[in-house]
Length: 413
Image (cartoon, rainbow, N blue to C red; front, side, top):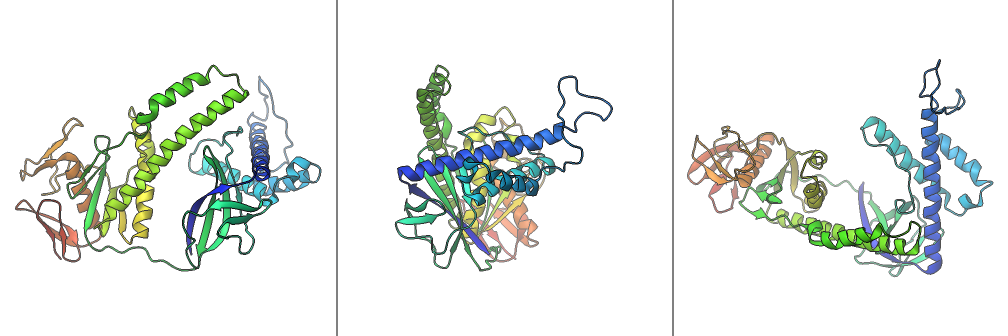
């Protein structure tokens, strides 16, 4: 089963906007109530059996089961019988809100994520229609439950054979969008290793360096608009909470943040396609980018968006039939890609790689990218002989490939 998600801009009427905003309010109310119910259940069992809390005690029946999704869905059904506010939203949309909360709660327990947060009117920005009617798509509009036909800008055609399964309505600073999930009952095989191998090294000095010797400068998406953003946020503290002026200023700040985010995402897609040009295999380090954003360079790491770039690169490689794999990151900048010997440890201020064993000299990031490429090829279970400026190094590949980049490298079986 192949699933694609396409994003389109909606052009709703005033009545449809009122319905969307009301649905977001109902979803926010259901989320906050269900989250408070779960937290109260946990707090009621927090104190020992023979002692009470000094501050306060949550009293809840001992026999009451944990309020999981099924329990809260039943409570929601009963509450809708007597609450017109809950009746105003689609029932399946509210059920999906409870399912999202249930997944977030499970991730907190199983994967060590943070606790789900209570939502204000700015944090609840989307809801899902899990089912759509038959033939909901036309050239000028899309049919959605409760909204009927909503005009949209179909910026690209829907691929033939794909069936729309669900739709997510998203409220952004620039308007309303729909994320349409399309499915096609077909098995698509993963790309197999072939063609020219390319290693990739990510960093702060340069955004990326390839094993072919190309260095890509890191753009400052946030820094270019940080001054304007700082001035707007400084004005925000003087606005009264709940006022219209504060709301308008929040919208300006949100539009600026979206501009930064959209620019970054567009650049990541263009760079991913550029890296796939002429490559049959792309190898990258297996890095935990969450830990990168906890160091002293957290702001620069978040501005670069390394994690988003890797996810986009993997998707673009799949679309363009390029093999994508991650390799061990340990020691890639300390190992010589030419002879494979470990050189002395280099600090971050040393930007040139020089091997004391074979005399190979090149840029540090390029050398690390070449080592990433060698590890990726070695993991495929083949052998390679590489000629770099007259020096021979062993790696791996299963067929003859010419690796360019200013130096003569030939990978042979």
